[in-house]
Length: 174
Ligand SMILES: [Zn+2]
Image (cartoon, rainbow, N blue to C red; front, side, top):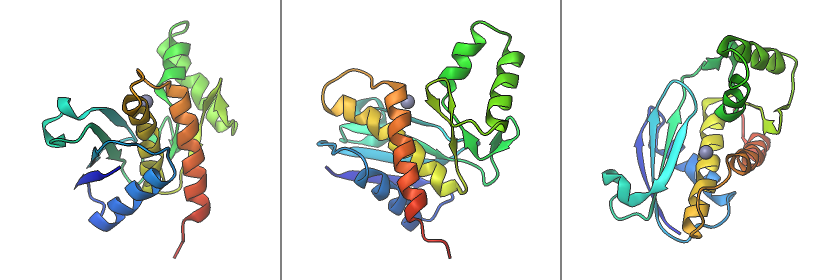
């Protein structure tokens, strides 16, 4: 496997490469090439797909984009805490959007580890959030790489949380 990194975020190129290599080293092996783009964003988010649909991916078989969130990003008042959009959408289908937000806010404030089956992840740094998003997107790429359809979002989230936990345990704090 090889990858090409386009760092358009405020992270240094060295830091960006370090995070990408960590996520790759802790994810299942992807056979074909990946083009990975890091860019600044408000919240953690990412996309993955066939390289052919993104010009910047060049001849890479797959592409991944990952946002580098703001230093103090927060969603619903919980600093640097995140979860997948799916449980919110599922809940909102039977309730008002305001109720759905309130429900999530209460769940997070109570220190829950999951929303239904979906893990809630807590990060301390922007780098941790980037590793989480990269690991999530790499699981999508793995499914494309093996000729399967779209990877389950829940499997991606569970993998990303495992990688984040390893990263949090291994990060050297100066
Ligand atoms: Zn996903």
